[in-house]
Image 1 (spheres, rainbow, N blue to C red):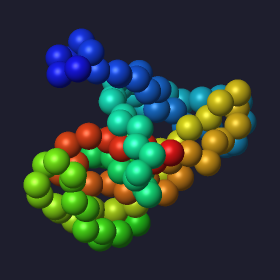
Image 2 (cartoon, rainbow, N blue to C red; image 1 turned 135 degrees about the horizontal axis):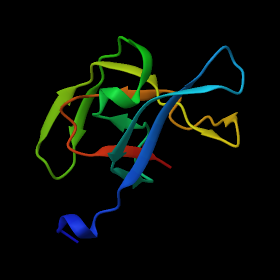
Image 3 (cartoon, helix red, strand yellow; image 1 turned 45 degrees about the vertical axis):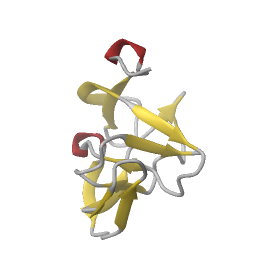
Length: 107
């Protein structure tokens, strides 16, 4: 599965609640790709626009298996994920590292 057509992509709608009510302001729609990894202990994202709000400083050394290199993360933040109006705990403490070659979802 090396061709672009074989890769899974997800359309992500990035939105904000206004005053905690039912009104939602859409910030952007983007297409992103996530690798689901049962061996990962954290979610790692290289797409800053997906994270909501401020990044908390978090310097974690990350080594990419198969890539032969390592780098340091820039911070930690939240990627909001709501289903039927309820906030899910997924992506609540996502590590942001602009050098990561694939977004990784820990399961």
